[in-house]
Length: 506
Image 1 (cartoon, rainbow, N blue to C red):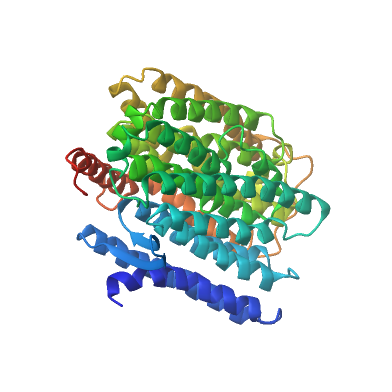
Image 2: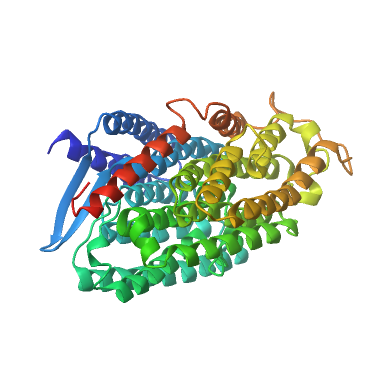
């Protein structure tokens, strides 16, 4: 096996092997469990650094295994997957540190961290998928591995939330399976290639490709929480804070949005999708989800519930970016894969920290939290302002590119939509910040018994992701920034589209 083929396998193994070992370890082997999980997460980040350098130098890392004569399992590292994979690797490492502190003393840590690692493996498989079949396999594995995390508490609410999550996810997976079979029967095996591969079939199979696209978006839209397929997400917030963080920022919701990006860009191609009339309805669906999700967040008093509805609106910006059809808007959608993740995980780290330290779980209970936990509240402030789109933070970079791209491509309504979204986001974020910093608490907060305001394992990941949120905006023009990589991806997509036009593979 070559080094280029081994790298995708190693990216999976650094989570899959720890998952198997951790599930087999006795409950009391906490040190071994934590060390093994952290070692896998650190190794994955190191491997991603190798992948980034290799792809920047023009290398393609691919592993191919024939399952059937005309059906391969394909794992491939290339431009668009690297955005998703790098985000996943970095945030999984930070969330591992956070989860170790959050779950200290929990009675079922072996089960939690076993499925936690398995979820990482499934997420990496989704990111590495080089064809629709491989995507489907890991998409379903992601459902199975995250369900035990959602129901981890084992109480009535957790089990009810888990049932809702499983019902939606299985329905979405079944829809995705039907789409994959229909496409395979109609046009044969196809792979995910920059610029798309279905241009040659658009004339002869136009109706089929439209139907398949609708099923693909519906199947992936369940995990992406596109309305009206979002009902599972607020109910799943009964899960522990580290699970909520990974559901929103890294794994499930982001995997759905990432899947839609791959379908539009790497399966159909932007030009083919536009010629088939697919981008307009997709943009409308994203716009509706953006506005309604943000509006629902305003009235939610539960902090995690407010963040859940916020996610529904924020992730829709990724879909909007690819649906607008232009290169600049595509850059905005792609970079938001990263920006939304680091902003939202910071807020969930904050929610978990105040819940663990102070027993606070509602926005109305946050009065004066900033005086008792200024570091955590400061991190939440950075992330909240970034989501609103305050310059020069990460969210501003996203919204600028989406608005500019929409205007340049004749979508006059895009800047108006983003302006409305900004107002709605401010309406549900600013009350959190105002209450935390300026409202008078009903009673004085008891001083922390620790040296720090909360356990370092809870604070360090929060500060790190808040710093990334700030850095992604301030250093957006740097060659190593998420924006710079998104621009390289968009350029590769443009080259791929041109290659498809002349019948050649990019």
